[in-house]
Image 1 (cartoon, helix red, strand yellow):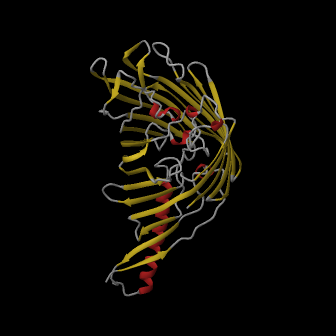
Image 2: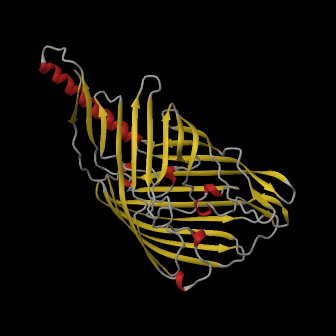
Image 3: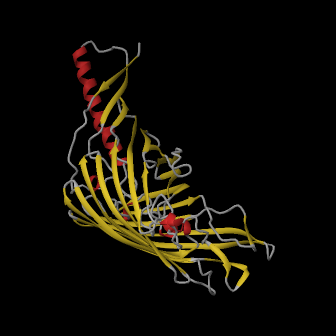
Length: 451
């Protein structure tokens, strides 16, 4: 007769965050080892020697513990806004299937002065150009970025290792509403990712860690519903990926244009070269191609515009004390892939010299940053980022966005392997086509505990 029981097989190991281990340098990841709970279904007693059976059972369970921990460590990604190694993992007796539940509680407190940004995050596009009494100073406290995630890993014979992942935070509604939202949810197997994940055009480890949830304005962190295929070559030195992703267009329609449903997915691709003992340094070349559809009322035609973008990015470990981050992006009609321009209506606009025609808007951006590991559990970082919209076929509206700049400096202290404190200064600057300028300042403080 079969019976169910829980067996506690490993205890949490506290360890100071190591400056030599990239995964534990950045506050996104906890440093403590997870605890594994073995859930087993025992078979009928068929061995005459109970002690021998118990010994074999214990050996099998210990192997399952190690295997489950390794599986979930390898599945935990480095990079911008990624979750920590989970505290608890549940596995069956042979680790044919395991699942983990984890997350974090994050409190961000912010004080804005000398003009504020009209956004919960620091987005240069949202700096108000006209200063009013309501735009001078502001205090915020926000816990909407607290997160919960679930990951399942099945070790199968036909499909190999199958990963199922879903995570949530509380930014699904209006500011302050704490409405849950699904950030990502996907299944991965045989090099395929099917579901919702960070866009393939994003290089997750090319951006520095910031308390500001938006990050550098030239970075391109966003989610997409997709089908993606990735493969590694040459002992993981080379990696390539291609995807079809659900499109989203943000254009300026004016009186002559109107929106219609999109018909072609976006197609991002990348090729990455990595080096170092753990392949922890890399450079990446990426591209994205899109076909944007709209209705031209003036000409009574359905128009489609070709949008495209190219990007060069990287994360380089100079020494164990110094790490560099960078990305540069250029293209037309790619506001969806630049933090500062998402939802700005600048994928396309009516032509300045002929309002009955439409054109994709050219734009570019870049960011550079450095992280200095002062102690094993203390680092500082800082950087600069800028985004520009270029003129094409005449003069744009005077109050149209031309440039945004983003400057930051911060310090993070891992008080324990799972508890981090941080402080940050941010400067945002916006410039319009007519030369009008405005800036804003913010100080952020973070307290975050991962579980």
